[in-house]
Length: 443
Image (spheres, rainbow, N blue to C red):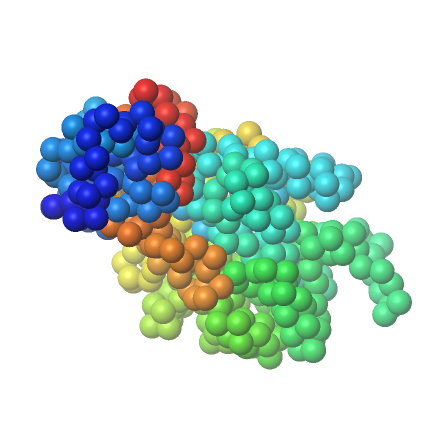
């Protein structure tokens, strides 16, 4: 592979300019084996040029004496920044007690602190599928906070008595003069009933800056008043969400588990099913035929299993995770598009296991398939947001000319040992996002 003429011109400036360009000039990463996010075969003994926030060249030529800042990769493996498409910037890093008794400032501060930790685990992009992360996203994009790129869904929308309706038992019956529940009023969650209210709430969330809408069309684990088997929202209400999203040239993601709830969601136009642990092979085939993504998480009742104070929720967790193996195995056989996410909730310590959750995919996939899913595959899902996608200067999830410079140098080869990604603090020697180096243990 040859370096571009543009990059050659940049690097023809000579060694005397290295110090002058060290802070702001191009960066040359030498002596690396590149996993490009798409192909299983590594580009061996490669050099990668980063100019500003983009990758401007990949070359197997020897550019060790070129100008600009040079980082010797020492034979490490260079991979694209990781992507988590089912992440909760606020929910992940706040104990449930804070969500119950705290306020929006506290959960926002904890979310901002957690965002930097997310980036330092090598996750350079997240799709936030629930919560008011708009300000955190803007501040990260402006360089005022450290954190991953965020494609925010804004407040996830529930029907009365559905998943995300965490109001106390005494909250109903309501009347039109009642104030909204606190977490609804500050945009951490949202509720809408009936087509007119659904349409209005969806438009409000898009106005807030959402890149896609997140709704619930089935029962949940962590919520109290919705058994797993219930369908949530009528077909007409789901279609109203989809129509509003379509007017904004984007899509709807839906939390749902069971067969009937998934089928109706797909038929109504939902484009990503979040979870789906309890559906049949036939419904997965319907998803495949309608080009609908399965955004599923490697959730198991193991050492990383979620725990709930409510015994009903704990039993729901067991019921759902009993379907994890079947879901992954069958989805792979059927050929439905599968995306990687974690859905870590209310546990800052467990959030540190984000990379370990990704490594768990080796139970069903090869290391190559695992890395591809968390890079170029997930980036493809994000493109469903169309013009609402906030990062369009180049592709994400790949190492290619013109792509965003979101890069990780791994001490070892994760295509041979995927467990390397489970301990990013030990094994990720360099983390770059948008051309900016946030971790460098090489120099």
